Image (cartoon, rainbow, N blue to C red):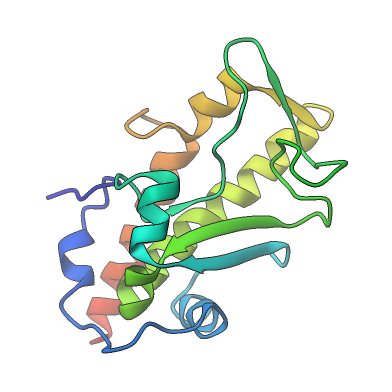
Length: 171
């Protein structure tokens, strides 16, 4: 049964959990060890579940983009000043905020980090192909949940695949 972001394996994430959440650095290493390909400029910030939900809502496990544009607005790939709406910050990094609960499960960590990393990598490519900016509509079409054949669904499928591989290996 798909969970809040549509992962078919989500119920399996919580079969083996830690008492304490991993650090972002530990979680990154776990995800890479289990097959996630994380670009060097993708950073993960951990928020308590309450702080995450207050900021991004309860319908996701991780978020990097809550843009302040709509309609015909466009999004630049990289911010030129702090606080500017863009895919990457002024340092050229994409910061993904993750709910702390994710870091209590190696399966959840692998699925979520792989999912967000694939989206990030493909979005950076799409931005470069569009001369460094993208319309809000095009961006939203690429990452919207339940949009068949888009980046979000491909990323979800990758996360589920890696979790299934972990289970096959007894993890």
